[in-house]
Amino acid sequence: MLFADRISHTYPNGVQALREFSLQVARGQFVAIVGPSGCGKSTLLRIIAGLLQPSAGAVWLDGARITQPSPRIGLMFQDAALLPWRTVEQNIRLPLELGSKASRQSSHHGHPSLASSIAPLIQLVGLSGFERAYPRELSGGMAQRVALARALITQPPVLLLDEPFGALDAMTRENLTASVESILRATGTTAIMVTHSITEAVFLADQVVVCSPRPGSVVGSVPITLPRPRTWAMESWPEFGALVGRARELLGRTAPVV
Ligand SMILES: Nc1ncnc2c1ncn2[C@@H]1O[C@H](COP(=O)(O)OP(=O)(O)O)[C@@H](O)[C@H]1O
Ligand SMILES: [Mg+2]
Image (cartoon, rainbow, N blue to C red; front, top):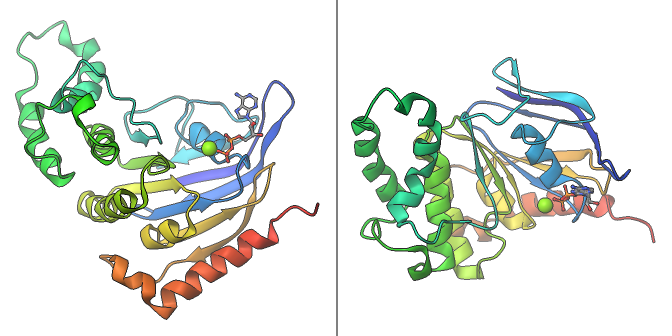
């Protein structure tokens, strides 16, 4: 479904961030990318999102080349970046308003079908009762739940997550990770997530892809065979530990020789 074909990228200042990074993601699959800081993970996600043109290589989504941002690809970052003057519900709705700007001139009636579709999503991400709260009233984890709902409101077939739990405390992080697993399973969304946490990668993914130091390329990948739904109780399973070990070993191999 999504195919990143030998993506290379060199920034104008001469820094080569990626070298022939290839990634194939099947529909509904969850791929986690782990790798050393600065290996080009965020660069890769920006290229897949169509926000940045690669120096070489191409990204294909269902056979069409991605060259610009598309409503078919949702994004979630470490910083929820909510608009402080808008409520939870208004923040989640934002992409609908932006997307309908062009077609709004002909209609003053809004989008009743979209209005009714927001309640199940708010429930799905666990924000029922907080629809009218403002960002300043939310914890970090709740703000990220808003960001997730905002990313999913247009029902994108693909969701890109760049260290979405990086700024959260450990307990909130575990809760949110488990929520994301069940939410993406419920929506059937295809996902690519960058994370620093191997444990989190194994918990969420169907496949953990390990990236080399800069310029980033694929060192290897670990298929995750754990059943779904995933639960944190699985962390103590020998199989879970073995998978974490295999990913860590691949990462270790990428450690630069000093
Ligand atoms: N806009 C930019 N201009 C120049 N260099 C950049 C830019 N963005 C990132 N880089 C460099 O590219 C490399 C990869 O960055 P990044 O994709 O953010 O890595 P990661 O997300 O894996 O930490 C780093 O060395 C970083 O300093
Ligand atoms: Mg990054």
